[in-house]
Amino acid sequence: MRSRSLLALTITVLTALAVWAQPTIRTFGDRDWAIELPAGYKYEKSAKPTNESMTVAWAPEARTDKTRPILQVTLYNAADGGRSEKFAPAFAQSAIDGVKKHRTDWKLETTTARLGELTVTRYAWSGVAKATVAGVTVSIPERGVMLVGADRGLGFALHAQDAAKYADQTLPAGEKALRSFRLD
Image (tube, rainbow, N blue to C red; front, top):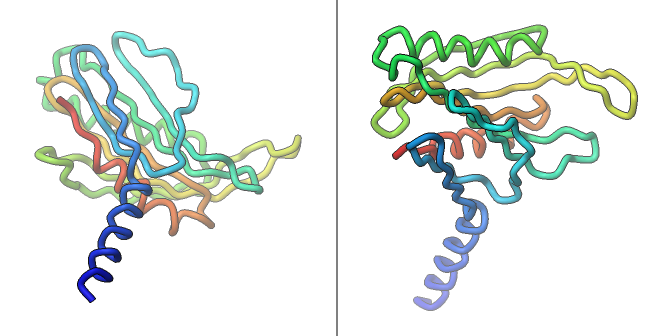
């Protein structure tokens, strides 16, 4: 009986590791950051980083309907070193406005959340995006979660999104990945 319990525990641990075995560590400026990605997520070509900002994205293979979840990290150096009390709220508003401008039927819920020792703004949103699939423009209802905050002059926007019909399955794992984000 004991060996069955040990085997079950071993299988559970190995399964958990297979799902969350993709820690990613990167550097921006003089800060290291890390995020743990769900299994199957691969680096997507991202904009070339500048001294002011960096955006990195990951996604799994597209589904047969050409949709897929995406995770994105955007980092931004504050011009004043982040000392301004207005920096974090203004950065948060700018980050979510960047998502909103590409959607119609926009709905937004704003709360606060904890990310390690930091208090961040949490946005849960839904909207309809336009996409071209096989030469035809289609409307795709989407949902997403964004965590936005700042730490010692570095703003960050952590974003997970997917087509609404898959979001109940993918957004919990996406938000878990976002909440694994750490800055050194």
